[in-house]
Amino acid sequence: MEEKPAIITVSNLVKKYDDFTAVNHISFSVQEGEIFGLLGPNGAGKTTTLEIMETLRDKTSGKVIINGFDLDQSPAAIKRIIGVQLQAAGYYPNLNLTELIELFSGLYGVPANPMQLLEKVALTDKAKARYKALSGGQKQRFSIATTLINQPKIIFLDEPTTGLDPQARRNLWDLILDIRQSGTTVVITTHYMDEAEVLCDRVAFIDSGNIIGINTPDHFIDELVASGFERTKEVKKANLEDVFIHLTGKAWREG
Image (cartoon, rainbow, N blue to C red; front, side, top):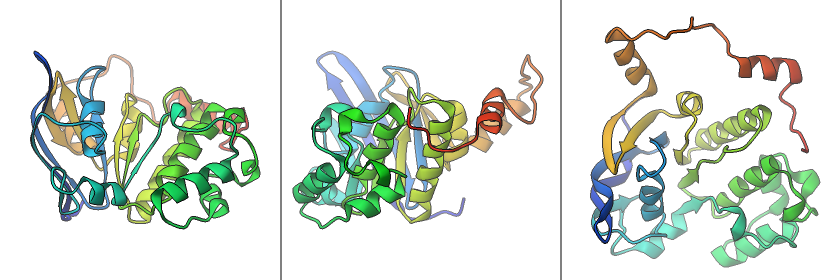
């Protein structure tokens, strides 16, 4: 993709817990308007890195600049321009979706139109439903809607499609691509490599707290193929998930 200014710059970031180093002097930048993926196995340091950028976890050392703001000097300014996907425990289960958006709007100190936000994630028919009554996919869509309340420049999504069925997963992909199309930068972690391949402009592989590669998905794949790698199974033009979507459709499901 065309080189754009960096909206996030991370330099020599370190996070230690006593003798354990969770993040080990990593450096990377995220371009404005891209979808950037942090990929790696469990315990690699992805979520820790994400939480530091989100101002939710203290770093041990290093420098983080977000949209020109230094994390050490201006965390409040950073909070105003980012959207963070909350886990389920972050919501009051007995409030309906309209009430929850109004609550978060008040906490952010910004006006929000609940129905407009719910329309973006195909949940207008659930405006009066309680959060606890939603399906897994609906909860994930609503959590993404809440990241957009303050019209952020950057949103952070931590494994947003984990546990979803193929339809809900593909529809969330479309939603994330639409968010990026509107000019918002997206930083995402995922364990699904097909998801990263579809969504991400660039990815960083993290293992044992170290970055072991940053590039576009296509570059990594082409490099591996050029090394002589061959899949043991013939690569087809579609996979079983494509068959599932073709047979059952892409309509939003209630379950």
